[in-house]
Length: 113
Image 1 (cartoon, one colour):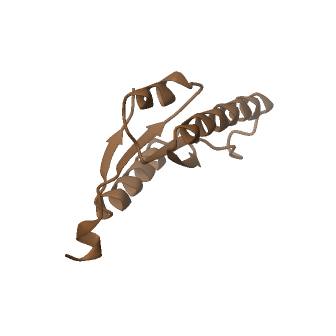
Image 2: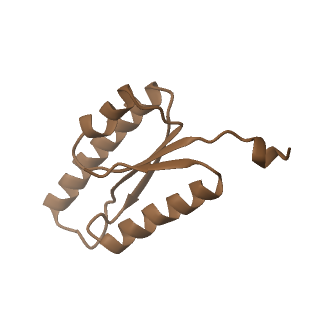
């Protein structure tokens, strides 16, 4: 048996997030995950108003807290910060992650609520 065929399937979750913690962390009280990809808003020049920077800064505080809580459960967390208002960029990012993880033989869940 080759090393690739003897590798155990990992459980991977993809979760686009906003200003929330419960929706991100609560599922993992019952579900198993080896890795969680969080997709969040980046601080971008095309949203260059002070109020928008304040919202993005607030978002990053939620990102940090979610990462800490998931990592405390022993889950690897990978954070992507992109333009969440660009649906094409969101879909490209989710698609890229799915293709990568499927090639590795993993099971993927996309948590969009």
